[in-house]
Length: 213
Ligand code: HEC
Ligand code: HEC
Ligand code: HEC
Ligand code: HEC
Image (cartoon, rainbow, N blue to C red; front, side, top):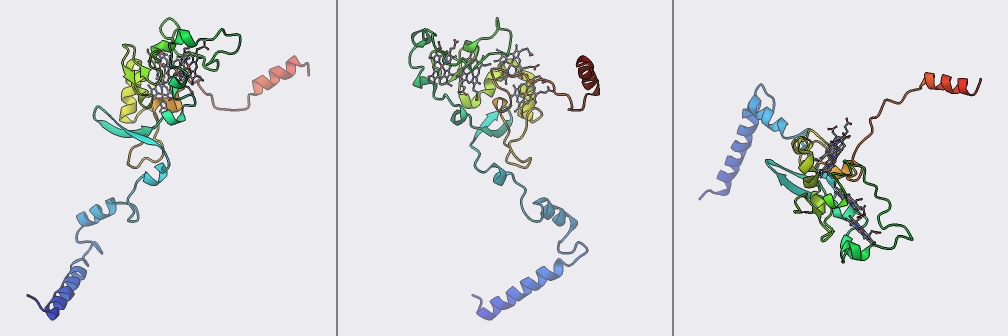
């Protein structure tokens, strides 16, 4: 057993040895390797993380192939979910006489050729609370990217790797990426090309000519 004095001596020795041995050419570090390791841990000693930026975002974790990351939850955002509040019976039994507006009058499909795609390509009339693959497999609304992946495999691969799409907040881990439907409306997914906005002097001239000025 050590007595109190011995313990104090040991403590002082320890403190001295630490402060002496670290005063070498790398300042407060033992070696340059130590310095690199310590500084890589974070900027100004704070670990780099997107955690605080993601606070309040409803995320789910997914694993696709070798990639595991988070995407925003969707079901809570879909205004007419859950579908079975109305779709408790087969479609032909709930179809109205259409003297008034159709139920989903605001949804116009402009995606693929109408011979290749209609509502039933993605929505299974017998189970509206879930999406459906072309072969009739059930897909959760939170994982609708699996639906898109059937036909857009190259964008899906790019997205998994982080080359298509965008992060939800910061680039630092943990990885949280927007899912396909955060950017593309599944019913009208195409984006028009955007040209840089500028003053079109030719158009102004033509307009003036038309007005006879
Ligand atoms: C407020 C009631 C209501 C809710 C909620 C609702 N639907 Fe419907 N839906 C209808 C009715 C009624 C029809 C029949 C269409 C018609 O003839 O008006 C319909 C038709 C459809 C059709 C067939 C459209 C067609 O032209 O063949 C699809 C697909 C559909 N709904 C999907 C959904 C999905 C997916 C959800 C949930 C995200 C949903 N619906 C939620 C009432 C609803
Ligand atoms: C390419 C696949 C696809 C096709 C085709 C498709 N949908 Fe959808 N639909 C989706 C996906 C995916 C969602 C969920 C989007 C999200 O997460 O916001 C959705 C959402 C909906 C919703 C819920 C929207 C809301 O905001 O309440 C309704 C209703 C719906 N679809 C009806 C239809 C009808 C009717 C058709 C045919 C005219 C149709 N869909 C065709 C994929 C499709
Ligand atoms: C059953 C096959 C199929 C499914 C499922 C599908 N698409 Fe498509 N999509 C097509 C076809 C076919 C076209 C039109 C041809 C083209 O431009 O590639 C198209 C076109 C598009 C375009 C426009 C392409 C362009 O050049 O502007 C986008 C964006 C798109 N789809 C995104 C999606 C997203 C997001 C989903 C999932 C919600 C989805 N698609 C599901 C077949 C599909
Ligand atoms: C952060 C937003 C965002 C996300 C998430 C996203 N996309 Fe896109 N996508 C775009 C934009 C913007 C374009 C248009 C690029 C252009 O026109 O140059 C595009 C283009 C496309 C095209 C047209 C062909 C092309 O490459 O230009 C397809 C198909 C497509 N996306 C499918 C998908 C699928 C499938 C997913 C999910 C696996 C997805 N996108 C996720 C923004 C997104």
